[in-house]
Image (cartoon, rainbow, N blue to C red; front, top):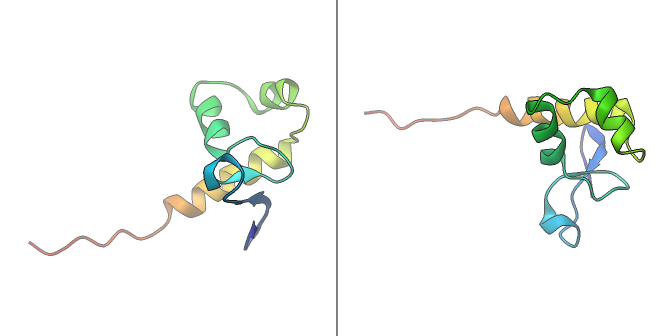
Length: 77
């Protein structure tokens, strides 16, 4: 299933345990985050994973930004 607003990101319970992946691959969005957090550049990721494009990596980042922007409600003390 393609996620609304994120046509390059899909979720399928039968693939990677239902975790978000780049459409048409088995590469999890979290794998891309880990590589970027480890200092790997977008160009290096694309070179190492020919199934990906720079737009795929940017789509993963956009998805992360949307998920991080989710409001958190804390109970009053």
